[in-house]
Length: 340
Ligand code: UFG
Image: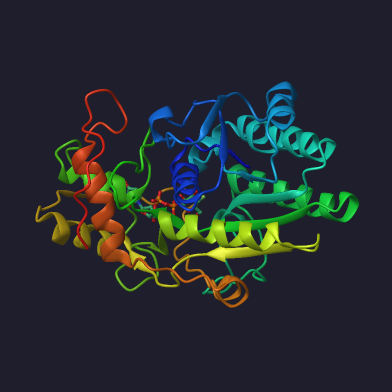
């Protein structure tokens, strides 16, 4: 049995789907503040509760033979973290403390943790490797880095095994079109562009056109959520057979950068619709370029991304077309119309 904390969220729900697809038994713990119950695979056991509540977590360990824990639950809005850092330190750091403490009490010592490119801040080198210095520039990135440190200290003191995965820009949706990206509010570029092209937003704002990049807009490394999910499965398999010696941190990206203008152009091409673009000021805290080197996970776990930008946007569009209001009532669910 695998415990997936935050399994109702965007990335967590895709990992749950992959785990179920290959026959794992899964229990999901989620408080549904940002996640969606409809996103959780029907074959997973769902417990509504908080990872920061010792009783909620203990009950799961009492009842189910959990072998490993995957932890996706977090607040992840950079701008919100700047104005409300205590929320981020409480929900991302303090709550994880309780989860870890309870795991250790029950002798559960295999932990996979969702971290982020935001731990690097404004990187000194591109592509970013795991050796690139971590210097977060906002409380969100800081909160993730703090948890990384706690996890590493627990490894030394209590023989916790861990795999930390630092995601770059997760995007796209499961090929079945049944689950996808549905944040409220939505701040990410690809869903915002697709919502606009669907008529749900009047225009798209490009935040900054004066960066030192080939077209003046920020460059990011977009990675398909199913490729992320598959990396978790590889990490899990390595941990399930290990004899207590897995302590790993990996970047996860495609290794290719696309500018904001590239993304808008590709979305226009795939949807056959024209965007109304508004040029806006830079958004605070956006590094000009974030591109990952995922060479370590490729070499050590044999991970390879299988979706390129075209398919990332196609699967996202498939989800948005069929769920114009996300998981809300009235959405069309269960479509299987993705074509590569
Ligand atoms: N952007 C726009 N207009 C929009 C939305 C985004 O121009 O309406 C731009 C942003 O300024 C940025 C790029 O599109 O240059 C990508 O923005 P996203 O918000 O989609 O993603 P970020 O790169 O800001 O965020 C990602 C993760 C965060 C993580 C961060 C690290 O989603 O969790 O990388 O910097 F913290």
